[in-house]
Amino acid sequence: MSERDLSDQEEIHSKVLRAGRRTYFFDVRSTKAGDYYLTITESKKFTHDDGSFHYKKHKIYLYKEDFEAFKENVEEMMDFIINEKGSEVISERHQKDFKKEESEVEQETENTSTGTSSFTDVSFEDI
Image (cartoon, rainbow, N blue to C red):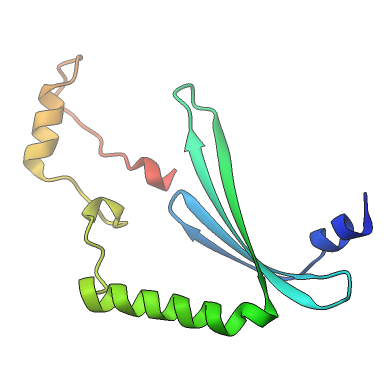
């Protein structure tokens, strides 16, 4: 393993943000020269039909010389979204307390092959 690989694995400071099927990792790491940089990793869980799963990861490397411009752009984009669409989540299926309308539940119950009248509302995003 090279010196670069070892320094890339050294985490100086870390924070995790869980958001449904996505998890965001914020990690401060050290360069070969001993300076710090930030990695932001998005990890998203995908479940297969057989119950097995895998994760897809995307990583951003952010260096100090780009911090100010990056922060300004992120803040501008978030402010734009809030100003245009408000802070409420529009898609109610993405809200943690989402419950299907009673008519939707009845319709799904009627469509089941077993013909039972009970229905359990399960959100797979919480698994």
